[in-house]
Length: 141
Image 1 (cartoon, helix red, strand yellow):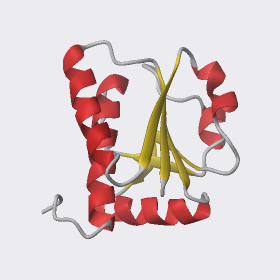
Image 2 (cartoon, one colour; image 1 turned 90 degrees about the vertical axis):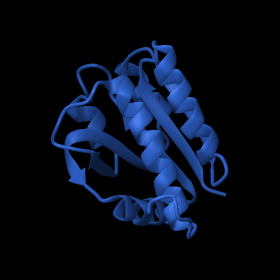
Image 3 (cartoon, helix red, strand yellow; image 1 turned 120 degrees about the vertical axis):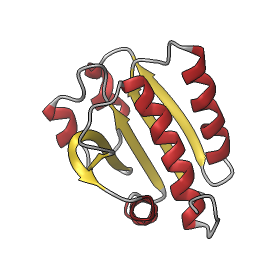
Image 4 (cartoon, one colour; image 1 turned 180 degrees about the vertical axis):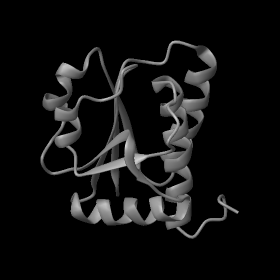
């Protein structure tokens, strides 16, 4: 089974964001083992990453993908990362360049900037969508 970890700098303060993220995290767990690690600061990121996993940094200058392209990336990353995939979300100021360099791929959801807390909700929804697409589901239609 695919192991997915979301590492984020900071937590979700607002209840509506916690509820939305929890709902999509629950949906994702039908397809993978999902965990979320909240770091107090980006300085702890290097210790939270491992070399076996395929690591994806979320950043505005990254590659923009469609939902089906993200599904293909997740499938590819699962193979390259021996079934382990990590998504990294920075804090309010994004990710430092040295943190991005620790990752295998840079992913952008848009050229627009989103609040890092909202990005976690968007990521979990798109991850659910990608996993559903990869399994032949119809959520994306």
